Image 1 (tube, rainbow, N blue to C red):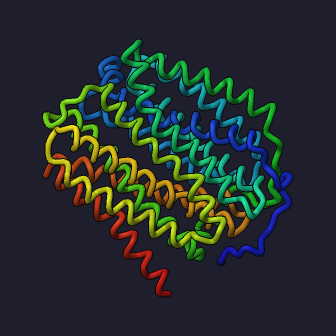
Image 2: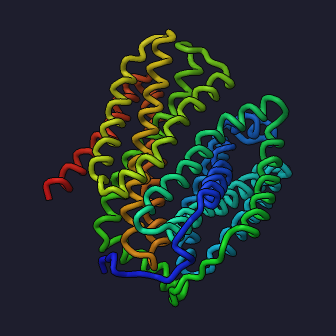
Image 3: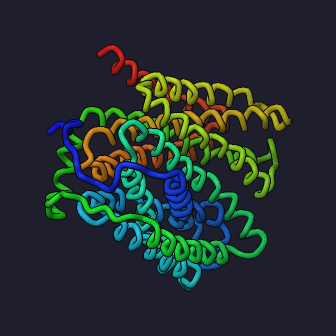
Length: 401
């Protein structure tokens, strides 16, 4: 079946205040950050809990696996269960898991907590369609873009936040502080969020089965997911390898210096509201072409980074901003397109979209580590260039047909 825009659902009042948009954006950012605290902390955690060198990578991997499973198994419940209750339940679970992580005495218990943190963090992907439901059609892209800017800021700021806190105290404090934030967030959302009860009357098994049909017979979803998988693969490759480059002999930067570099890259999050407004004006194709072109340019600029000079660092920072701008623009344009298909299927469409490009990001991280170890930064930049270039070539077929 092809989802059409004719499908409609009676939802909460079609209007969303600036305050509610800000609250949802902040909530998405705070919850999404939980996924990324472990990345700069993997070394200290491994030392404290006695992970073997080969198992240290599981600290990040288990969180990502949990998130991927949640996208496919939990996010679709947004089309079946009352949304506010689902979000609050997931946030409370994340708070418990965040407290369990620093309390773990063995690697196995920590990895279990990490898996649960990833699973519960999909609350953000229930909140984004929830915001889309609240927005009128004419402003849906703008609202989604504003909410996504909060989510992306959370992703980009999580690593420097964790690095600064851990250097000032310990990695345990990062998790405890985040758990406290989750509890406070749950209280605020319980008071402020209106209820939304979906009209879907499917069983859970039927809900999951319908996702297969959506994936097979929804061309817009297929294209937008492939575009973003390529773009997010480039994003993950870049942010997996640039800390290695900056910490190496070329730049010899400290952990705090790398954290400041990540802060500069967060400037790309301003693309979200801009992309949303462009999509609302019917300029999705132009914005998509621009996003992919920025991705290509960012990696071409990366080849100019050939020494540890201030100029090279400036070019690398500009590359990060352009890439983040392109990835964010393409993401929001894709969400605007798939959310317009059907209110009834919105959470399932979002889960499929996110799971697909998340897989692209995992591939980008993996191949980025291999490329950097095999051929250094220059080889890595050429591999990264291929991701947005492939997306642009596929997008060209959409323009012709």
